[in-house]
Amino acid sequence: MLERHLKVAEEAGHLFIPTPERVDVGWPATEREFEEAFSPIRSYKDVVRVPEELRPQLPSSFDVVGDIAVLKIPGPLVPHRAEIGRAILAWNRTLRVVAQDRGVAGEFRVRDVEIIAGDRRTTTVCTEFGLRYHVDVARAYFSPRLGSERLRIAGQVRPGETVADPFAGVGPYAILIAKRRRPARVIAADANPVAVDLLRRNTAANRADHVEVREGDARVILKETAPLDRIILDLPHSAMEFLPDALAALRPQGVLHVYGILEDADREERVQAIRNAVRDSGRSVKGIHPHVVRAYAPTQHHVAFDVTVGPRSRRAGSARSPSASRTSRTRRTRDAGRRSGRSARPGAARGRRRRR
Ligand SMILES: C[S@@+](CC[C@H](N)C(=O)[O-])C[C@H]1O[C@@H](n2cnc3c(N)ncnc32)[C@H](O)[C@@H]1O
Image 1 (spheres, protein in one colour):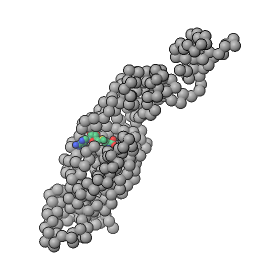
Image 2 (cartoon, rainbow, N blue to C red; image 1 turned 180 degrees about the vertical axis):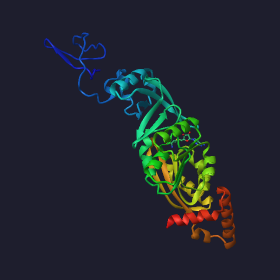
Image 3 (spheres, rainbow, N blue to C red; image 1 turned 180 degrees about the horizontal axis):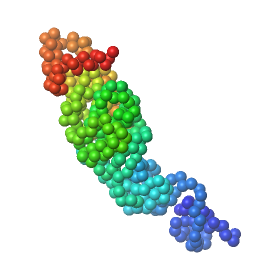
Image 4 (spheres, protein in one colour; image 1 turned 90 degrees about the horizontal axis):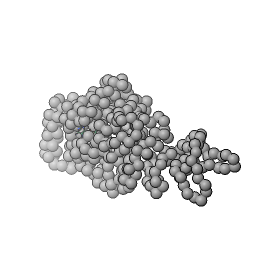
């Protein structure tokens, strides 16, 4: 009810309390000018004008992407979205655009947004760990909430690795890895042409020109770029569908980062599904570590599974009859040769050299 950004005035023994509209509380009311107060505005909620009964529903937090604020607005507040946008711009002078987030959808995971205040644009430049990214919040996926997860993955990359990021979006994993680690090769690709344009722009803007940028379906990219030491499957709703292709493209020893949006009760089942897929690819799981990235819904989490894959262990092989074991080894060797277009031997030798 109070206009907190205006100063209470005192004149001729009367106190004048600023309110956005005339209020009838039994005291005399008048219309007058007030000076701006110097007290800091702690939240846009201090300056927003919405009906009192809707205040509890005002969003308490929102994403800031460069100079764009992106926020979800509960249904009853949607008719007041322009006022919410105005208040956010008044509260934070570094923001230039406020966009209503109406959800992420479709194969390219793009956000349906409506500009509710400020400049009529959806493009901006944001900074993450000192790197600059051109983004378009309406045409290519980008979430500022995942920065620490990207840093966590980059921290695991060892010198000399070949890393593939086939769901790269505008490039925040691939560029961070290329710039902060010493990989031999980083491949970044996406099926969304707008994301790929931004990805090219971002590799140039960050002088990460050694990142190999490609456009196309992840399955094709994985086949074309194998053999790989590390693959980031950052397509949480359907990463499991790409797991067999990723395993086919992985070197005999390698690491997969498989993302998922899961009910908490389903986490163990997902671990087992990953184990099964690795076993079906003819290899074994050397380690599998679920890491909770963030809460997604009351009973769901966004989870990363860091999976270290190795050759099938001797013990697993010895459970079979000698002839069955020989047959499956022969088939695996032939498949490996077909997949990479090389003989399987040099790949295996490379794997051993790296281990020493
Ligand atoms: C969740 S976003 C991840 C973006 C990026 N890794 C990041 O951190 O910002 C998933 C990306 O996968 C892309 N995508 C979806 N299906 C694909 C496919 N079959 N092949 C390649 N890219 C695909 C989308 O266009 C989107 O940019």
